[in-house]
Image 1 (cartoon, rainbow, N blue to C red):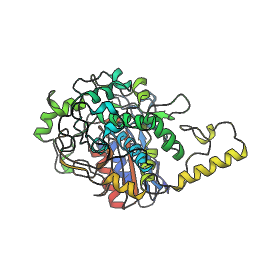
Image 2 (image 1 turned 30 degrees about the horizontal axis):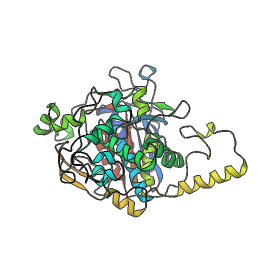
Image 3 (image 1 turned 90 degrees about the vertical axis):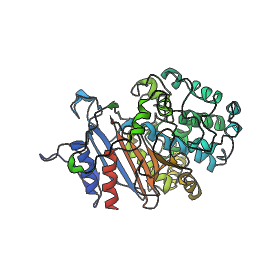
Length: 446
């Protein structure tokens, strides 16, 4: 793997990190995001057959307009360990929890939600299945009465509101993206089935064994990310004439987002006013549908573990989750250390999903007109699937974008996992020019 610390005069941004031989076009596409596509701070990691082949970062940790990228005024430069809220890219790791519970025999995806959550059957939801929730077919994309941010974070108000209200359509008969309610639905199901919050289950069963810097709810000091980016809305540059056809939203899409009474607006405004995603309260809440904090390296590693074995664990056995190897706890007795090493090696060599679970997760459940996004969309069970409205690497790719620019997915056929994490929130919902560019470049390298 060759170092690519670009500091020459003809490059507008200092891109740091490494790419393997043959993946240089991906680095160039990443750098071009900063030169022409409005990027201010981001990281990109690609795994191939479990090993990193692209690991890049650049810019600053604060995308606020007017801040000079990479300076102390903007919160400092993006580093290899910088993490950010990944918005709806959170939905992939959250969905994986339900698949792993199903894989272990602790949750039946074909059972009614009320099997685990009896209060949920009110108002015609007695036959709403766990499968419907994962595939955005439950008819609950919006709340009848939006929650305040404080209510959204309390872990009680969201599930209670969803249990009480009637669905917007008969469950299982149509699909529509659930931006916020998805997280409360999954979170309550995991709590009822296991007795543990989804974030704690993920930390204990997935993140810690695999050494992942992914959190649903930031932990205490010393156990969180080494650097945290601050999200900010930034202008979306218009593509140049040389870039080809300019794609603009369809009139009906624009109207749906502009109408406060539309299902689209009601779904995205289920928390009102819009929460401050950089606030300690929001970061601690770790909303499963939109509030995960992750590094690109760990998010890519997570998807690599879904589709195949990982060759090694990043952290030394016994090191606390969120801290580097040098920050390990007091040395354990030799026998305990040996057992920890064995568990770490075993975890690093296995894949998270069995072949049957992988097939289950990415088999198409929903396709066609989306009642919330107002475009055609494709979903498996909890994961978006490659489509024109949410392009990934190939037809078999599965993962999830985050509104504003983040993206993470896996492509089992090529053994590839990808994660793009950004602080610069542009106006994209399910697709973004920055991720399009790096994915196109990656496709050409494979």
